[in-house]
Length: 92
Image 1 (cartoon, rainbow, N blue to C red):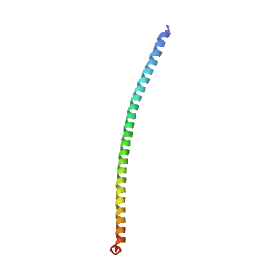
Image 2 (image 1 turned 120 degrees about the vertical axis):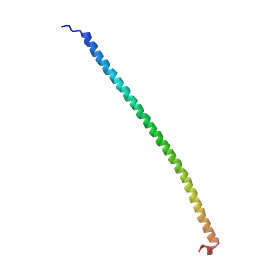
Image 3 (image 1 turned 90 degrees about the vertical axis):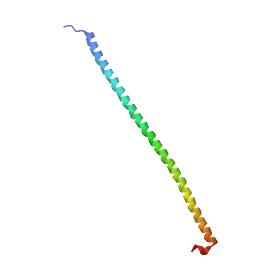
Image 4 (image 1 turned 180 degrees about the vertical axis):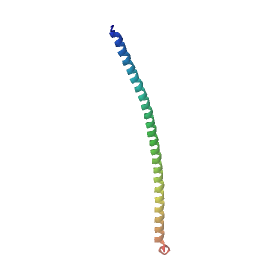
């Protein structure tokens, strides 16, 4: 029986090369999927920030509107009280 150690080493090396090539291919596929997931995450985060900005702007506009209405109601009340003080008989 002829035992060739170099042919055995070649088989081991071929097996090792196949394993590392497969590992590299799986790692590349994993990183490609990870990149897609990160892009979707960033897209959702940007969308959420845009929505928060929109809601904050609407809140500020509503606050201004509400403040104006409160000032108007307050002024009308003061004017009614002042006119009542000038002419107490018209209050009844």
